[in-house]
Length: 164
Image 1 (cartoon, helix red, strand yellow):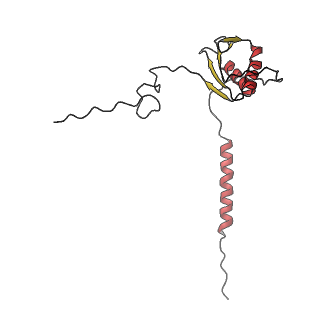
Image 2: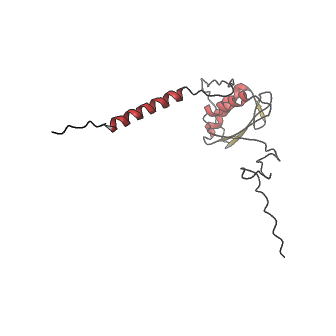
Image 3: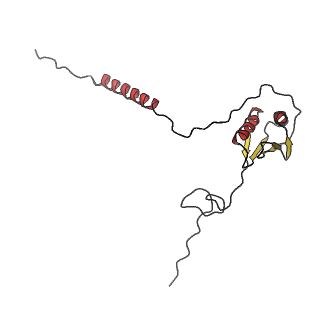
């Protein structure tokens, strides 16, 4: 009577190898630390009460923050306490209102983020940032760009070859 040879089962071996691979991946990913600059991010406080406001039917609004943190609604200075009621009135008058947000170069980032948070908490979803294009900067419209760089004008075509 021939003796049965022992055979190695490969399927359980593959299962164990995948389990070990997944375990090592999880352990190695948990030990990776994000390296970057530590920053103190601005804190925002969500509004607790929604004041009542009369509807404002405009379809867009320009918001501006000057260097001192003063908010301007279409060139009109607004106190800090009047910002939220005015935004709610704007949203109540037109739910699809667009807000164009701009800030002075010297305005604090935290003040801009606080105003953006107020705009969002009023229910306004369409927000655009107004910027000033610095002509001559790489990528600015009308500026020759580096090979293949996005933005700017395409490089001029080469001059035609002289004919003999």
